[in-house]
Length: 175
Image (cartoon, rainbow, N blue to C red; front, top):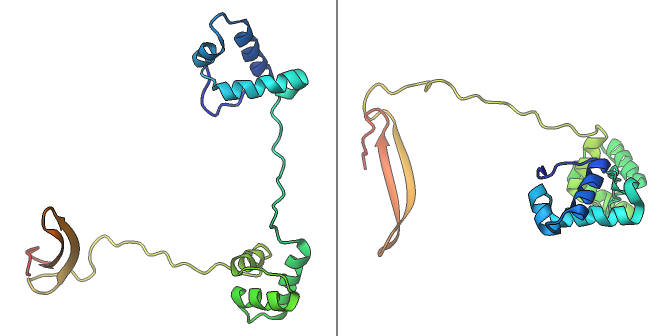
């Protein structure tokens, strides 16, 4: 019956509480058969005992205040400074802001605030796609060599480097 991380309605929780209370098997075995963890059941049961059926309803998560959130006034001041000093990077803005306002803002926070306010653009990324075949394929031996370096552990001997040079056309090891 119980799927992991499944949400139950208040009436379903109440039915499960009644089923466990009326069961002759005992709490642990009944919950095992229902597939509900004991801790979950007892959380529901405590809430039911304190507030009745209404307390079993899921509550919407409330936003948690962050203890180190930068206040709106400092955010605004940083944006004003960025508009006034357009040639400064987020790192330089963070340093200048810290010295002038006696309020520390890290480079990452300065970048995030500027980006949230549309004052910082993301760098343009060039997407390179792999081609189907090599642009200048080899047509004879000794035109292109490939190298590889590997660190090997040989039991009873220790660690050794293996360096190989392979001819691209013939695929033979040169050295």
